Image (cartoon, rainbow, N blue to C red; front, side):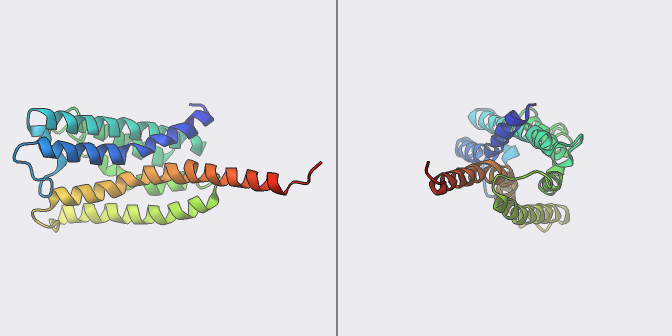
Length: 214
């Protein structure tokens, strides 16, 4: 992947959060006897009809976007191997499997391999420590965001493993913590490319205004 193409592909990180959250929320309204507060998104894959199809589409689009985003992270890291990129790609594969196989199948989530998403933000920032952001203040903001997202992921995992997740709120907690995790690629794309591009344009404009006239 060409470096300029990779930097453009980073924008793929913008898609997982809105696609997954909006489509699964809409699907929830179409599902029969489905409570989004108490039930995981995957429960809709046990039904026939539009809700199942929309939930699958959401997972497929999010998964493909994560794979493209992971490939872009690997390319711009300029490393032979990028742990962060690998985690995003593996997470993307798990999401795609969610969109192909229904809940209850071991292939749904690809044998829980999506758990690697917890490591993805921190490893990505480690892989990109030598890569310049167009606006270095974006890196400082992403460091704070990465800490929050990583700790949130560990908290969600701990709640799930210990059984301390509030009873009757499994669906709500999945949507909250899932949104936090999906927010990382979106915010990274914004701070690495979006705000940086704006900052660079402001600097160029400022320099042109202060340049001596001929």
